[in-house]
Image (tube, helix red, strand yellow):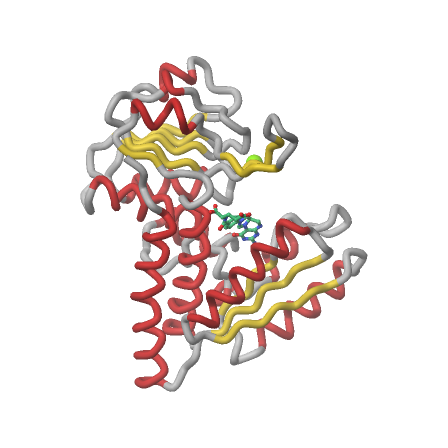
Length: 286
Ligand SMILES: Nc1nc(=O)c2c([nH]1)NC[C@@H]1CN(c3ccc(C(=O)N[C@@H](CCC(=O)O)C(=O)O)cc3)C=[N+]21
Ligand SMILES: [Mg+2]
């Protein structure tokens, strides 16, 4: 069975739109998201345009700031400081990756943690790790948990979750979230030995490695729930560009009980969770 991320995202947005209305009526606050895009990358532009459109559809304010690829780090930090001070801006997202001459860690640390809707600031990672419940949680990991629950129901306790990938953006925060859901969590990565064998133990298998068709059908336990985080652009046999995940979908769909497709799986949920974080930030700190 296919877990429909597009539908799940639409369902979440519907809930959010009611909450946006409520926040406006009760506190006269309209959540506002600012997305900063440095340089021109066609894939990023499509994605940023989607975010801006969906933000407005929910009745939230949305602002897109485009900066030249050769902007100095200092100038970007100054711009961020202005946004940190701006009362109408509740969420700030700096699209990654940044050009090589800019120190990414420094930029992420400069975002006001209360407006850090990506959840990448060390204060939010620390809060997530502590389980204090007041973190802004990274969007893709949130989306993964929602999609797993869409198939398995609210209670994930006791499930063995194997996460392939240990990035600060996906693998690590997702492992913490799954632990909070009382899963038994294994984090696997490029140096893991006997990877296939470990994956075959997973009730919930999450692939976040960034390599097309990396996870094979026979790595999957029959009846498992598979969440595919990969967004890989490949050329098919006719030379046309195609979007595929990290999992060999055709093979996996035969073995798994449920699997998220690419496109139409985790991607749309990432954006919906970004909108959710913007609402949360506006409600909490607005
Ligand atoms: N600060 C920051 N935060 C991010 O969250 C962030 C980022 N930088 N840099 C780039 C990556 C990538 N990312 C995607 C989100 C949704 C889709 C998405 O909705 N994809 C559609 C397909 C879109 C298409 O056709 O290209 C889908 O999977 O169905 C894709 C990619 C967020 N990122
Ligand atoms: Mg990495």
